[in-house]
Length: 249
Length: 93
Image 1 (spheres, each protein chain N blue to C red):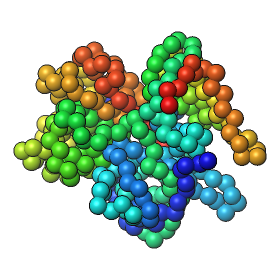
Image 2 (image 1 turned 90 degrees about the vertical axis):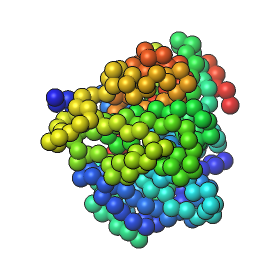
Image 3 (image 1 turned 60 degrees about the vertical axis):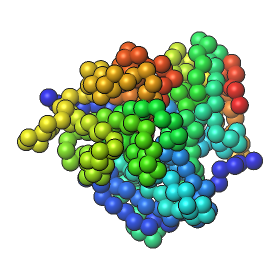
Image 4 (image 1 turned 180 degrees about the vertical axis):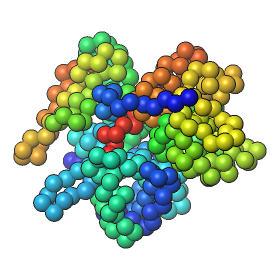
């Protein structure tokens, strides 16, 4: 009765986003489409039959005009002792095929239909599912106000930096607030500390009551941000979280 | 200022969202947005808000509030899944 089938995807393109994160563009026949925030499971099978499986978030926005086949983009961070991500980073090449199933997830999704303000909070590669939301907003022209608060270790670790800067430069684009927690380049004008209540309060600019929040990152970030948002007046149901760990490897 | 997240046991924790594919395989529908109630503390929330532990053999889902076990999933040698959900008072499907 399995209603979720493994299918073969073909790697169309691999892009380096940062020293540790790559985008894998996959061609998927018979792809039913996805919602921003969803993920896929990726399965590798060794010659002796051993299988390893991980979940990776979809970074691309849905394509409503391509119902029978599509490309999706996965953002994959290389986990040094991982089983799947080192293979994807070091071995996989354009033209290779791998097993994928999905899209998966009905909770950590944003369809862009509601006009309510949206607060996105990302730590590290937790930006990936939130990027699908940012891109979806841009592609559909949805005018729900979107603010992204994004924590990275260093400037070189900021994924999608130039694209985010381009989107934020538009008058009706998302507001993007960066913080670099480990080191900052000369002349850095963003924040230089972990995301805290004061930073979130400034980002919200008094709109907490109607705002829907999506928080994705390592567990300590997710928990401290969720706690801070509830302290700022969010109903717990308005704060949706997704933990991202090395277990993503 | 330099702060980094130290890897520890918390970093091994995922949300049940991460096992959404496994849950579709077992239940035939998306379970991450399904409301459930913890049989231990009575907390109600979407299945996605449960904590998922996937490093041990099998998969364990724990309540995000009281940390008690809500569901255990084991795969048998003959390809069946054994699902022990006695930690859930209900699922609203």
